[in-house]
Image (cartoon, rainbow, N blue to C red; front, side, top):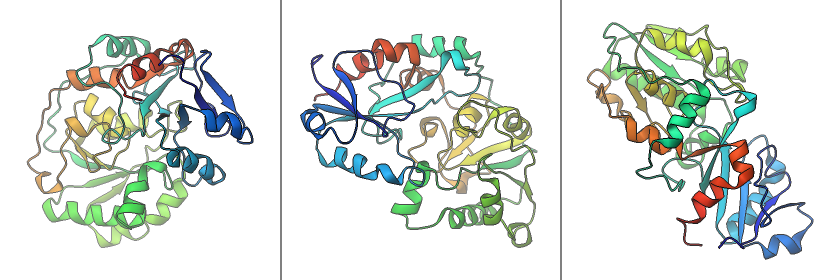
Length: 311
């Protein structure tokens, strides 16, 4: 299997690095001969609105019926620096319920490495009974919203309103809405009038980014919002992973969320959530989702994935 030809197409890999291995090649879309000869493909996760010109490449890979690897930004983003950048690698997707990271019951070594590299902390579970509901929104147009837009046939702004309406069925607590640092003006337009319709709605002023990952919904502002939160609610934002690590009871409303295994899922339990989950194995498994750039160049994620997938 080490001799299989793994092809990445220029454009669809963008800034994600490839291993320095002889069987990995990066070619232009015009090199159809090499593309047709591929045993396996590798591609970066497509951003639906940002990379419309690459859809033909992605569709070709899917239609080929050949196995393909998807790369995506890291799971653990807080504390990551330019010298130790990480990227996710998985078969077929990056959502936790569609991707195969080959990481079930993983040992703790990679988690311990990432923890040290990024000075990560896992805090005890916090039970702030007087706190607010923190609702973490995502960047409009992001690929992570694909399910609700395409499968549920609803627009993201409609999902936001319906989510708040559902929360209001079960609690009168203050809802603090945290918008994503990117495209804030778009999200604020989505929220126009929401404070008139629903009582006890706040829009956080702490919506700075603070990480390397393209204005990720984290950083010091997110920590300030978490400080007095009763629970954190979101669709599949990476912020949910951070809230679990901060010990805040978390509601993931999409099974593709990387925080799904250690979070609540049903808003009708928001006043009686599961307050604690066992997190160590979850952290161990996430450690085998992402790889540092020097490890990628050595081919470590490829060696990890190829041994467990029947190509």
